[in-house]
Structure formats: structure tokens, C-alpha cells
Image (cartoon, rainbow, N blue to C red; front, side, top):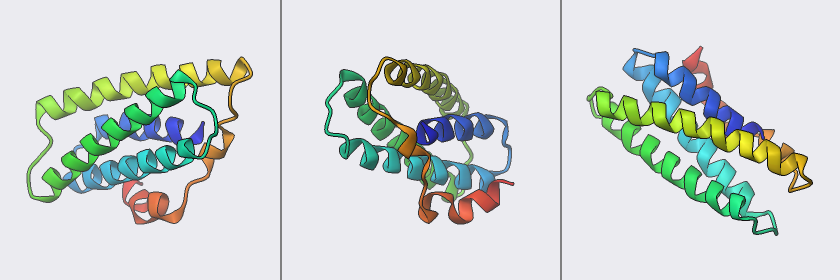
Length: 130
């Protein structure tokens, strides 16, 4: 579940950041993780409703984070509304993670491969978050 738990963890970190440069790095990282999860989900030859919902969720989260990242990179700060939406997304990601854990415990697909992340997800952005 690494990809989803990583997205959840980064969203939680983002909520306490005040530096726009760190916002850009975190949003970029989340966007990349969402793309990675979508790619991995496309490789699973099973179509559980939960998997289809996960693909939709990660697509929406990725696009929202990308839009926020572009805005902040353009010199704007995250608005209160964007912060509220990101907080809601973080809460939803906790529910999604719990659902995936239940699905796997019930004999569903093994999501352990999601823990692998390539350099474009973790690269320079990870260093900017420390």
C-alpha cells in the first residue's frame, strides 16, 4: 500500500507546511505518487469496484495537486479553500487506505508493489521536504 500511504503521509505533512517552496515540492511529490498508483492499478488484471474508485480518486487528487502546484509556482499562495480541500482529501485518503487494507485482508489483490517508487516521484522533491 506504499503509494496510497505515501500520498496520505505527504498530504498530512502538507497541512502543516507554511513555505511555498515546500508546498510546491510536496504537491509535486503527491502528483507523481498519484500517477504512479494509477499506472500500477492499470497493471492489475482485476476490476474490483474499489480499484476503479481508487483510480478515479488518484486521478482527481493528482490533478488537484498539480493545479495547486502550478498556482503556487506562479507566485500565489494556497488559499484557505485549497487548504480545506487538501485537508478533506487527506481524510478521504485515510478511508481509502483502510478500505484497501480490508480488501487485501479479505484475499483481494496484493498492493505491496505500490511501495516501490521511481526517482521522478522521490527525487529532488523528497530532499526539499526535509
